[in-house]
Length: 248
Image (cartoon, rainbow, N blue to C red):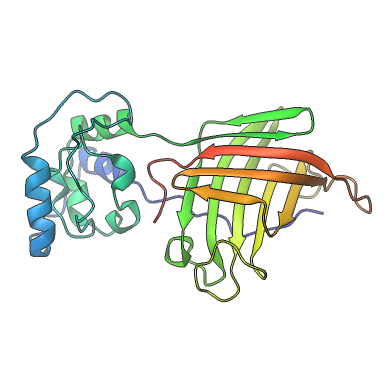
């Protein structure tokens, strides 16, 4: 039986906002209401110079953007060619009016450098590869008082569109990822046909999900929801890396 868990809402990408601005219409004026620390951080980023991007990897001497207030900083001053995109506050950036002022070349640069994440799920003798994997760390990021961690990844299996999710429930709302009453789950479902799915795998436990920075791994036994009344214990693993636009 398929378990419906809250879906990880796709992040409102700065890219989309930038493309909208390039498509015409009045773009909001740049905001100058950012804090002094945000302005200082943005200035240091802008002054760091630009290097040709090499995918989502950033140079060892990439500018430190950990103190940037992404909700208020003027994003046109950011050196998008060298910063570590995984350090960008993509969730806060949704509220930033200056995102609409990005030109088409900058939008294309960001697109070329973004790492969407990846995952490999193996259950028994079957393996599925995903070229996208976004994560939400903490209750603010999941927008839930119960879920302290969630992910989202989509794929295709034959004619079926699929979704793979890892979720962690902390009923205490303390942001815990493990503990006696913390529930860890992974599901892999056919989302084309909820009534008669062709894929419905799930795993539930208390010590099956390991998170180390952007790396997420799962090991345990899966149950096949396509055989109701029969409890399988098929060994499986997940090895995944959270994409740059994950929420923290």
